[in-house]
Length: 254
Image (cartoon, rainbow, N blue to C red; front, top):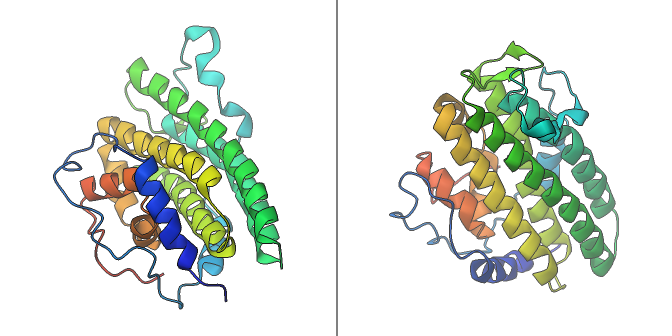
């Protein structure tokens, strides 16, 4: 098993890269960086947890082509909901992460692994950038219930499961890259990951604004990554987790 020493280095770089968190109730009043970064127990099996997340079966219809359609003619399809956008995001991002995780699982050179990771996470960032705009447009349309998929309402729990799959996959994959690339300078990746996690935090904030019940369920579905977010100093996500009432300094078994 490779050392987790790089996670400490990743955290140190990330601290300088992420200078502020997305506004969220309570986020600015609570210290979230007390954990001794980088000391993740050797018993943590990031790969196994990532495999489980990627292979989870959430009962929704997948339409990857929905992403970005919300801006057509500067109008919002009243039948488009936040779950539609999230499902579209997952349909694009999860296969990228799965392919990367398979390649990282092999006996791969650390520099090659980092180059692959930078390319994949650049694509992840571009997809999430679009999703933020789409979700903002859905929220701003003020069409009432925003929790529907393919024109049909779905409950908060299913929406939370869809979103949690994305959050868990992204963070676990970042941790996997840090583990594999233990002796490589991760600066190029850190700036991309900082943008990704900041935008994921924005999405959590948007969901809180219009469908707070989703985040109530979400809080119980991200325990697998909370401790990793602290260790990796993914500040934007740590702060919104605090806003959700999650004890980010509690021991988490994953």
